[in-house]
Image 1 (cartoon, one colour):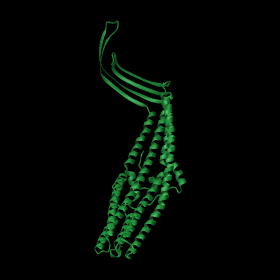
Image 2 (tube, rainbow, N blue to C red; image 1 turned 180 degrees about the vertical axis):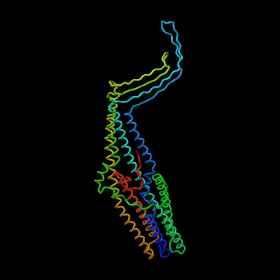
Image 3 (tube, one colour; image 1 turned 90 degrees about the horizontal axis):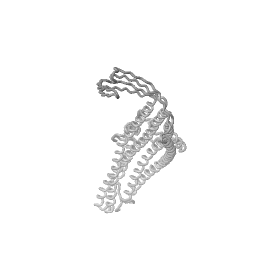
Image 4 (cartoon, one colour; image 1 turned 90 degrees about the vertical axis):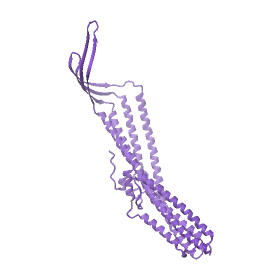
Length: 449
């Protein structure tokens, strides 16, 4: 009958559909391909943001050495020499004296702090706190980079599968269009069937181009995060659900204790408290020991050489400094209050992040099942439509619709598989456990000391 599709004459649709599904499965298996753990290791080692933060941690570590220098003496040496001319006229004496001397001197001075209002030990403690906080920030950044790396990996894997599906769909529709035009010549179908097939074939080309564009963007993001081009086939990874807490209550509890963002905020409060003590040190007296020695030659007329040495203890007691020290103390206390509010905000963000990630993981588990069932049902429906089309009970449009539904279901399944893996890594990061030691990555931990 006109408008029906006789698949028994071409055999095109069943063959191409089966080939598309097989190609997607082979790609997902990815034998001898790049693994996600290897990609995460590369990102951990090569990501420029992480390397910059590691340099910042080492830079912050030097603050400890700078603070420790407050315990040490300051020693300096001086030397001078050269000609000197003097012209002297003495009062009430008719004497005029002119001297030309060639002289010089060398000297050594040393200053040893004895007491500085406890500022040096407090500065050392504050510097150590800043280093610890910088390391926690590095952990935060490392976990985010690994989430980004897992996302980039799965985006490339998903978009590659989608491109393959869309290309196979275009090939099938092009073949189907050729046979439909041949059948039109013998009046087995109408021009409407040809137009419908042409419309679907043009739409499939558009979807293929869009999928290729998305794949190029995903590969660019992969290069930015991982640090190298994606040239090898990517193996299908597994989730990291087993590394996360078994329930949402425990996940929240662990995150509030172990998440590096919370630890960094807590360290910020500790450092702010030490800064108050440093500011209060301005109210205390200070004491230091100054020692000096100097040897000079020819610097004074009638004196061939001269040596002098001395040691002095200097005690300084602040009496009035214009109120600046009290303002500094109040300012430091306000910073401490601000840090406490920041900690509350960070805890709320961490709690919300865990709850959101847990919900996404739970949703994707159900979505995987639904997408697999949809794909199976769409495949069965297409097979049924093809059989009915052979009997003249289905039109070309029915076959086109069934084919498009199967492609859409497969694309949705690929996207859901991507979401399933990414959300499991996101949850592990929200808890604070997305670290090379937990993932057992083949990488040496970066030394930031």
